[in-house]
Length: 192
Image 1 (tube, one colour):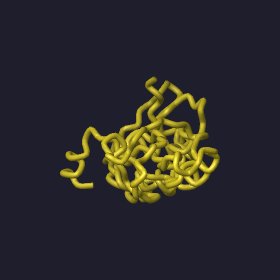
Image 2: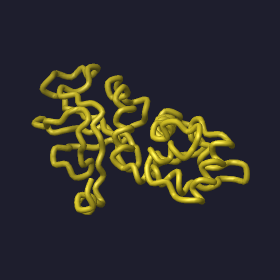
Image 3: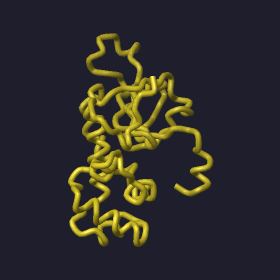
């Protein structure tokens, strides 16, 4: 996304379509003409999950980027939990999160550059899957020398940190799936 595109979309929530049910839910017993098309979407900024009731003329596909709050085809937006996703949407979740992380690489590399201690004994980096004390200290030492500029550089400079992008994707998935997680680093908690 260019800076101009970012400026144009600032203020609007965008997301990635996980699943599109043109004929509504299969467990909906209403007649076909009464069912509304549904799209399941993950927000690109806060990783919130939404069920969007769409206009009957909507033409979207899995993987499309969609403006959640400004799309004229959206009739109603409902915030949902991970457990409310249909199986098709859950199976696409990993790929969609990966796409979001890749598209905004600098934001997520900056997480490694800017992560801070949570308590005297716990650091934000330790919340990432597979990062223990040794890897955390290596990351902290290396970022003091020079901030990381890409996932590739991060992987080259930190021995033992394989696929730093996937580590973040796994953490986002964990935050979405686990309801009672104490620390949310990427998924915005409900404000309601």
